Image (cartoon, rainbow, N blue to C red):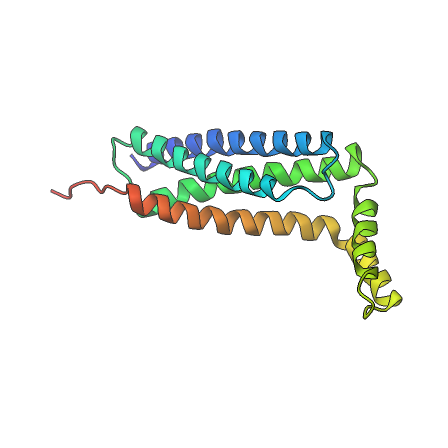
Length: 174
């Protein structure tokens, strides 16, 4: 029974995680096509957040349906965080491919945008700005991918907790 439960859970996590990642990548490609890859409009973040909430909600709902309309808090959390994690891993891979191969000057352009913003602050020394730029160049991928994973897991946990609490229905013990 537990093995069948794991199989259902993994299937739902994979399906909805892939859908969320696909949607996120499509939004990024559209953003890039319109020339907003470096400074996206705030609405892109809102759209991505809504997509995550919808994907986790639908994934937990599907798992509950496959589980005979029963859902424990733990099951819902596993499904929701799993969806967020799968999506985050695929999105991180996409960002790596994008910044390394599709737009190879991406990191340098980010550093230049940072530099221009820092130069507007008269209190920042030129050496400090250069150091920040070098650190960005050196740690961009580790920082970006780590941030994506941590933020997605945290947000996935919060959304999953809320959705699971609202949808939980335990089996009768009798």
